[in-house]
Length: 249
Image (cartoon, rainbow, N blue to C red):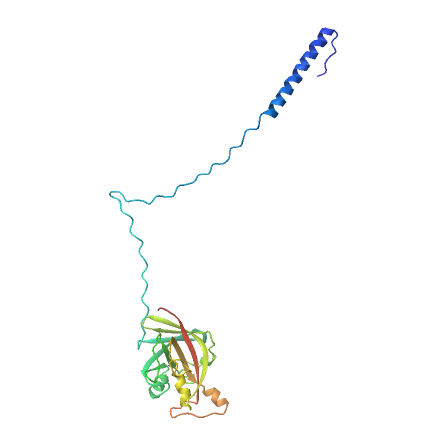
């Protein structure tokens, strides 16, 4: 609002005094603000917890019982002559019955078992061991007759799984190599039934498996029609594997 001009020296002096007082008060307030520091901001408080003291049971108090430890199942025992079934999922062999007998691979008792469409497993000094046992677990079956249970065995690739169920356990073997055996050479037959397949004289340190069948189509394709007194061709095709897992059936 504009001030109207008022005449007279008394009025002018009064107005000058009022304006001077207002200016003085402003200067004092500014000086006070510069002199007084701003209030400090409170820093957060860090709370440190003291370590827990061990609890001493008092009268009538008991510590809780320790948690029960899981019991470890006993390792499987060798299956021996228990009822046994063989499965090779990759070549569609499912639940093939394996019959154990004392003897050698593809002898008269073994051939008779195979002729019924089952697989034969020779045991003893000139045979092999049982499933899961350290050594060479031998299994033979027909390829071109008696239902052809091992008809696709030569197609079995390394890394394939062979599952043997016996005595309430499943023995999981992995195929690792392929061997060719000549029935015309005793040294070759000895390698087939050796504790370490293909390595006569080497001591076995782990369970292994040998799946054996005839190489009749391959021999005939090469013009080799030799056969022994039981009709076995010269060559056998063996798939060898090692035990990698054992679990409950």
